Length: 344
Image 1 (spheres, rainbow, N blue to C red):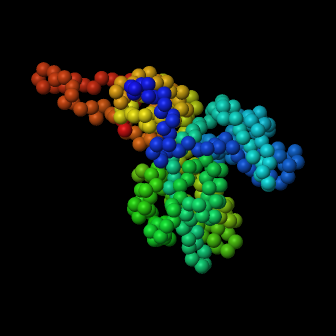
Image 2 (cartoon, helix red, strand yellow):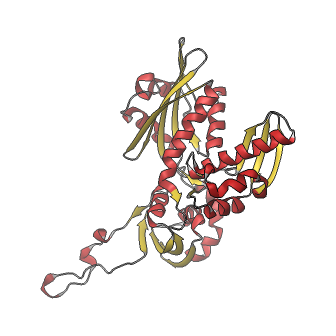
Image 3 (cartoon, rainbow, N blue to C red):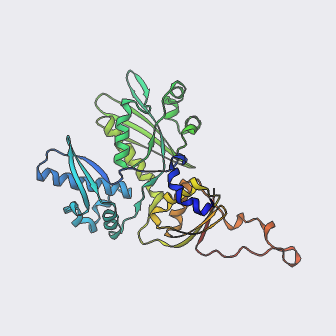
């Protein structure tokens, strides 16, 4: 079976994808605390749920206050597919297509579901000592809830003995992330987050540091408990990350994307990355795929970087492969116009 034919079964191989850049599940589902099931409380919770979703999709605190969304905030049910009550929370499922259309019509830039995986070293500290939060621990539940609320794929360490020796106050509170980077390699994440959260007897304070490539951000938040401070940290982290991956309204143009080094698994991963851009596969030539799509070039570059693809620039062309001209010169690389070239 040829490569072209085998593309039809690529979606069956998603389990083999590398553990980087993950689609956020339930991106359009919001759980909002509600005082009661009465109509007035329900309506207020629906508006708050919409505000949470708008922040989750745009990464901007003031986006929900956009004047173009005023009527929608008065009646969010026009983009709600269903809602119900779970204990003291209103659970709202927003319709993705209607939501995206309303926000884009308001001129807002959106962040798609394919988002960087954040490896998180979270240390809780109090007067009695400190403890590293590990995956599957009870202490990890507030972090998982905050990650879902803020739309981030979060990964926690196993917190075994070797990792507890790394996850100390000294390392987690340090601007030098070399120790944490080394211990994080086994988790294949896109960004590294270190949080030192301290219980001061009634109020929590957390200092966070975020590294992605050569970028380094940090901040401080406070909250009444671990759940509140976790949500505040991940809210700020999501805002920093969103600015790199927003699909700007009205800024898209027609592009041709050429990708070399493809196989079945990589094809499936690429399809997932390109889904927001309505990409159409035009050509398969050996391990090269050629797509036509509409996108902002810089934002597309950011998304492809999440898939660990590398751009092939004109300077990277091997001049030795070009036909020689008289005098030993080589022809200049042809203008590629709206063509972007990448390889794995």
